[in-house]
Length: 106
Image (cartoon, rainbow, N blue to C red):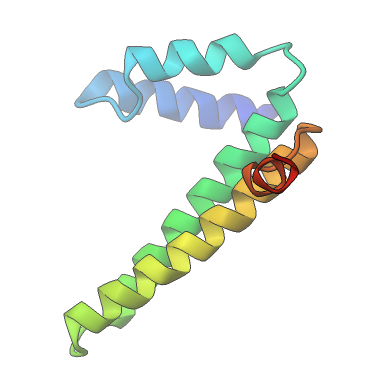
């Protein structure tokens, strides 16, 4: 896929040109997932995380001129809901019981 190769080359060029976005530790952890049973789950998790980050950046830009404490509180509450949903879906996709279900079983 040509697009993928070009995007990877752009990332490589950006990483070598200044302060890297990905630490060596992070890259080595990602590499460990290649070929494993949860490779697809990790890819989906990273996609969802980046999407949420972009949404929050847009929300933050839209709060200019409003009460900053209220805006941050709303964003934090939304984050908690999104992370809980994403974690539940992650555990479900991995075939594991969620933390909430384990507590109910104990």
